[in-house]
Image (cartoon, rainbow, N blue to C red; front, side):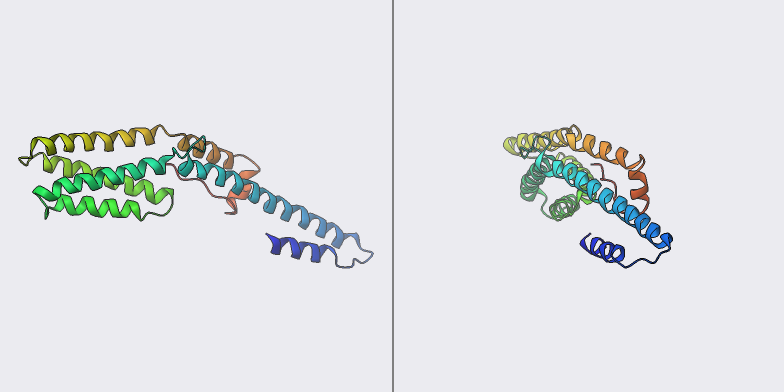
Length: 193
């Protein structure tokens, strides 16, 4: 934004002739630039605050969606460890490992959401595949507990305050004057998880 501000100041400081039209045009241009620049900055600040909830939680206590994703990754790793004792070369093991790695390496909320779904599908397939094996009593209980925890973390995610904040922000973008700023791609929606 400093570039627009400097250009605007330079443009306004140009000497004017006796004709009031150039002065009026400069004033109108200043208002338009201020509207778009200031509005975009305000909206992007709101977006940043809402986006932080994904990582830090509604209360800023670190209990956000990212924390739950980290737990899901950990539990998937533990399920892979159990599977490695019985079916190390199985396709379900490879798919779960790939989905876990994809979630770990995801950038941004939308990609994390997509890869979380992928992990859910892969873990469910691995859980079912392990159910076909003769597991030790300890591993059988561990398999159940891990799958329960993985599903529970998804339930926690579905009730997280981030989606409410993202919806509220996105609704603001649909109302004038924010809708004009959105139309010019100076502010974008927050992805839902």
